[in-house]
Image 1 (spheres, one colour):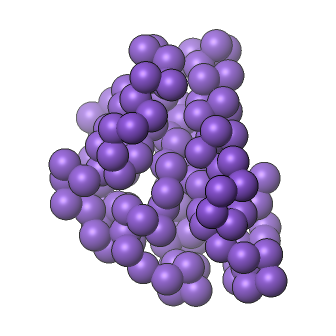
Image 2 (cartoon, rainbow, N blue to C red; image 1 turned 90 degrees about the vertical axis):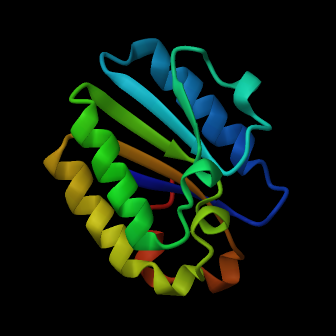
Amino acid sequence: MIGGIFGEKGTGKTKKILDMANQSIQSAKGNTIFIDDDTSYIYDLSTKARFINASDYGITTPKMLYGFLCGLAASDFDLEAVYIDGLLRIIGHELDSLEGLFDDLKSFSAKHNLNIIMSVTGSKETVPAFLKAYIL
């Protein structure tokens, strides 16, 4: 399953995704990864989750993010959930151009039985049609 926490800047998306990650860890049978573009929230995340600073890996495009996630899943067969805070900050692309990424992630998550939850900044008036099906 993939899902998106969508809203404008300052609406509590980061707090919500951190809470979701920390809560899911309590009942998780597999591993959890939390990806952000800096380390400012590293101490808000349970130590049972693996924290990854995406800026350390030069992820700048949707394809690079997809490949990075494939590598994480290939190296960890117990991976159960991936949380990505600030998707647009990490890949530096406009939301309208990401339908292909969401399609790829949907197939990937189903194939590997992996939950991928992302926070996405944007206005409710301009949310792309493809994203509406993923908003949590």
